[in-house]
Amino acid sequence: MVMQLRTPLFPLVKRYLERHPVDAAHMFETLNDDEAVQVLENLPSKLAAILIQYIPSSLTASVFLKLPKQKIKNIVEYLESHQTAAIFLCLPGQEREFFLHHLSEDKKKAVREILIYPESSAGRIMSTQYLSFHNDMKVRHVVQRLRRGNHKADSYAYVIDNDNKLIGIVSMHDLLLATADTALESIAKKDIFCVDCFTDAEKVAYELNKRKYFVVPVVDYEKHLLGVIKADRLLGEVQQEAAEDIQKIFGATGDERAFSPLGFKLKTRLPWLVINLATAFLAASVVSMFESVIARITVLAVYLPVIAGQGGNAGAQSLAVVMRGLVMREIPLQKARRLIFYEMATGIINGFILGMLTAGIAWIWHSNAFLGLVVGLGMMTNLTIAGFSGAAVPLTMKKMGFDPAQCSNIILTTITDVMGFLTFLGLAVLFQKYL
Image (cartoon, rainbow, N blue to C red; front, top):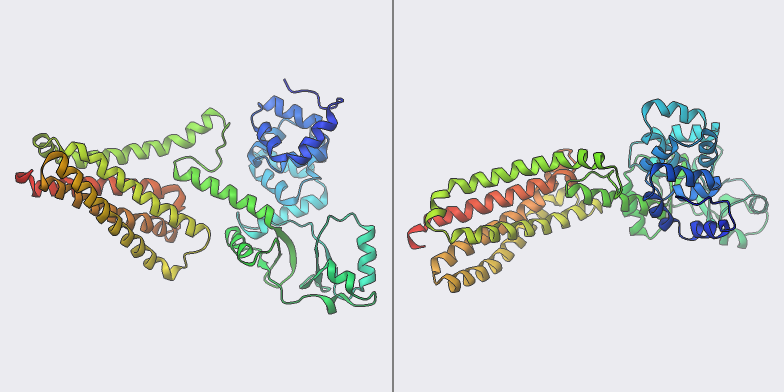
C-alpha cells in the first residue's frame, strides 16, 4: 500500500525526489498501476514532473490513462515539450486527441512542432527552454531582463536577428565585462557550432563529445534558432538507445523493461526464440549430414561444441566492436571494407594461435596427430569466418536499411555454427582413414 504523501513525512519525500530522482523513478517502476496512480495523484504537480523525467514514456502514458484529466494538465505544464511529445506518442490513438485537448495552447503548439521531426533526430529531443536576445539590444537592457526573469543558471545566451536567425552566442562573463551601452552583436562570438534539426541524435552526441561542449543550438536549414540540446539530456537518449540495442542483440525489444507485463514479454521475445530454434535446426541438419562419420569416429563429437563455441565467441567480439563503431560514427562508408578485412585478419591470427593450442591438446589427449590437425584447421577456419562475419553482417544490415542490433546476432550465430560444423566435419571426412 502506498503511503499518503501529504503527511509530516512529505518534506523528506520532496527532498528525496529532488536529490535522487533516478532512484525514485526505479522504485516507481516496481509499483502496480493503482499504486503508481496514487503516487502521482498525491505528489504536487511539479514534483510529479521531476519524477516523470526519468520514467519510460510508455509507462507514464499507461498511468496517465487512469489519472484525472486536470492532474495530467497540471503535470504536463512542468514537463519539457519533448517529454510531452514522447508521452503523446505512447498513448492509444483514441486518447491522443483528448490528451492534446487538455494542453495549453503554447504546449500544444510546441508538441506539434516537435512531432514533425523524425524519431531520434535533433529536433525530436531538443529543448525549447533557452535564453536568446536580439542582436541590437544593449548590454544594460539584457542585464535588466535577466534580473527580472526567472531564469535557470544558464552560462550562455544566444544572439538572434529580427527573423530569429542565429547570429552568435554570448557568455555571462562577456556580459559582465562589457560596457552598458555595447550592442550584443559586437561582443557575440559568431563562429559557433550548431546542428540541423534533422541531424541524427547519435551524430549530435558524437560531435558534442568530440568538441567537449555541454549544449548545442538546433537550427533549421535557414539558420532559424529552434531550440537547444543539452549534453545531459542527450546522454540519457544515447544511453537508452544503447540499452535498447543491447536488448535487441539478445532477442528482446527496446521497449521492454524489467517489470513489463508477462504478456508483453512473451509477445516480444517468443518470435525471436522461434527464429533461433529454426537456425539451430539448420546447424543440426549440417551435423546430420555427417552422422555416419561421427558414428564411426565418436571422438569428433567431443570437439563439435569447442569449435562452434569458440567461433561464436570470436564473432561476438567482432560484432561488439563494429556495433560500437556504428553507434559512435567511427566507421565511415569508405572504410567499411577495410574494417571487414582487418577483423578477418584478427580472426586468422587468433585462429592460428588457438588452432595450434587446440591441436596440441587433441594430439596429446588422443595420441593422434591427424586428429590434432583436423581440430586445429577447423578452429582456425571457423575463427577466420567468425571475424569476417562479425564485421560484415552488421555493416551489410546497416547498408540494406535494417537495424543491425536486431538481426546481426542471430545471423552471426547461424554462420559460425553452420560453417564451424561444416569445415570441421568436412576435414574429418578427408582424413577419416587416419583418425
